[in-house]
Every structure is written in C-alpha cells, then in structure tokens.
Image (tube, rainbow, N blue to C red; front, side, top):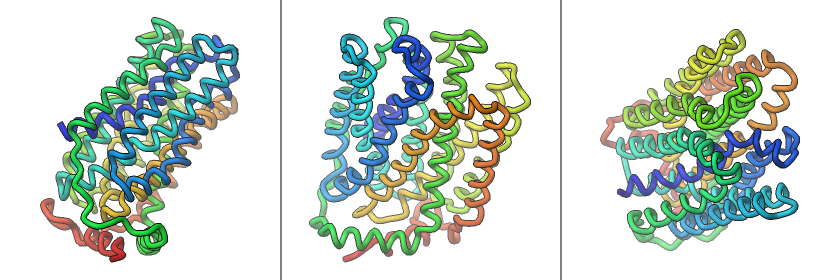
Length: 410
C-alpha cells in the first residue's frame, strides 16, 4: 500500500496535462482561442511547476516529504476547481482558467519529483529501482488513462475535466496520509549556506553526467507532449475522430510507454552499464520512429510506428530516475530530483507551442527536426554518461556509494 500511495502521486500530476489533450480543440472553438492561446493551458502549468520545483525540493529536504506533498495536492485540486468554475460561469473565462492552471502547476511542483525522492528514502538497492519503475509506470498509466477520461468527461461538458482534479487529489491525499510513513530525521537539517555548499559539491563532481540526464529527460517529455498535441489536432481535423475513440487512440502509444517503463524498472536493478545502454537504445528508437513517421500517413501505420518512440521513452525514463535518485544522499535528494522534475516540466511546457509552430511550418520538417534532436541527445548520452563497474543487485554499486560520500557535508 505504501508503493500504491507513492504511485498515486505522479499519476495525479500526469492527469494535469494529459487529460486536457483531448479537449483542447473543443476549448479552442468554445472560447474562440488561437492555437497559441490554447497551448498556453499546458505551457503555464508546466512553467509554474518548473519554477517552483527547486524550492519545494529544498523544503522537502529541510522538513519532510509528506509535509510538502499533501499541501501541494490541496493546491493542485483548488487550481482545478477554479479553472472549472471559470469555464462554467466567469465572463473572462480564459484568464481565470490560466490562473487556475498556474495554481495547479505550483501544486504539481510538490508531487512527482518529491515522490521520487521519497522512494529513494524508503527503498534501497534493487528494490529502489523496481519501485522507481512503478512510479514511472504510474506516471505512464496516468497518461494512458487521461485521454480516455478526458474524452469521457467531455461528453458531459467540455470543462468537466477541471472538476475531476479535486476528486483525484482527495484520493491521493488520503492514501499518502495513511500509508506513507517517513522515518524521523536523525539530525537537524543543515543551515541553508551549508546545504548549498553541499549541492555545489555534488554538481562539481557529477554535474556533467547529471546535466546530461536532465537534458535527456526534458527531451523525452518535450517530444512526447509535442507529438500528442499534433496527434490530437490531426485526429479531429484530418480523420474526423473525436470523443472516446479519439482518447483511446491517444492512449495507445502511452500504454506502450507505461508497460515498457514498468518492465524496465523491474529489470535494471543497480546495473549501471545496462541503464546507460538502455538510455542510448531508447533514444535511437525514438530517432528511428520520428524519421519513419515522415513517410507514413495512414492512421494504423502512423500509430504503430509512433509506438516505437514510446517504447524507447519507456526504456529511458526509469533508467534516468534510478541514476538521478541514487546520485546523492538523502539530505539533498529532494533538491536534485526536483531539479530533474523541473527540466522535465520545461520539456512539457515547450512541446505544445513549439509543435504548434512546427505544424504550421512543415510536417516533414517537424518529424525530421525531432529525429535530429533525439539523435544528438543519444550521442551526448553515449559520450557523457560513464557509469563505473557494476556491482551486485543486492548492494549499492561503487558509483552510488561514491555519490553519497560526495554529498555528505558532516
């Protein structure tokens, strides 16, 4: 139940963007918005989260993970309620929807990244990687459910999705309150100056590969939400598919991502070289998929080839989670994982508006430029990430021990 409670947290966060994807065309027509304006409902959420995440990461290191997660879930639900009320009754609906989405983004800042740090606190060794795989799979499962849920709720009225957020948040709050039991801190948290000095030590020794993994994570989320934004638009305009069927089609590549994430997380343990290999292979799968999509227009073939990209993303994300979570000691884990979460949110924020512009420029150019991006990131991953010799699955590897030693300031 502890794992289930932790897994509910990133799932709630995921719903914040993915559940809106099917309703964006309807929102655009109902509120008379431009393509750029409608993309802002995704972008402002993600930018607000990206800005707030490092602060909440620091606070979770200083106090406790639950002390940040539970209030942030409340804030997330309130933001959804405000957006729903605005769409239903307010005269300047779009302005208040954006305000609600900003509140939701601030709430999301204290959810998934802190859940990763919490997993690192509560689980060790190979079990930690397995639970992190569950967390990423939960994230993916939320992405699978959300287009279908969004489409079903839109059958009631297009803004019903906003009212669903508070209900999901209450469920996650109850689970977290009852089943997540943190160990009390043995030492008082270090003063801010000492804390920052320790962080500089971590990034001085491990910054090159850590920042590379951050770039990889941002790239995966940028391409994922960009392509989903494109697919949502094309399904309605070109194929005249909407409603639940549209949600089900959007869920197919996300189901591949969810399944692959779970299997990858359960198999990688602490095998560092395997993690690096899977990151590179996953990015190459994404490159191949985006390159081939240029030549296929029929929906069945398009979705089948797009699934190869989701397979690659499912290889990459659990490996990144395990590498980053194990890179520092508990005292600074919240900040380092939160910084990772922040760049992932920036990737999500950039996806819809940039792909909206690319859609107007060139379909071929959009896919080939995406393939070029993932290829460059694959090369960087191959050259910049250098795990040391692997240890056993049951013990911390030499690299993870070294990271934890570097992170200590006592």
